[in-house]
View 1: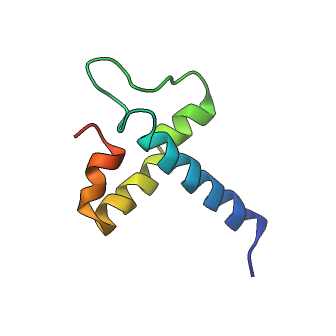
View 2: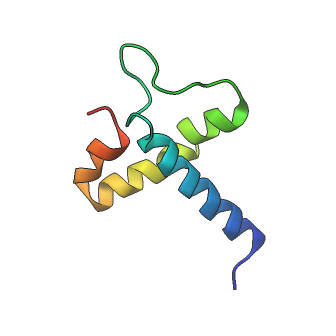
Length: 70
């Protein structure tokens, strides 16, 4: 059974993966690639959002180019 928390976690995961991939993969270059202006931005970029990108990279190491600045 899908709970409201499951739905929230799935949405956060989807948003975190999109955040890490677009418009430029990763979060940091010589200059930041993402704006970090509020708590949601920080959650997508760091904890818990970064875990989604890490899990995708573990599942397929080629995703390192999709979700990071590598």
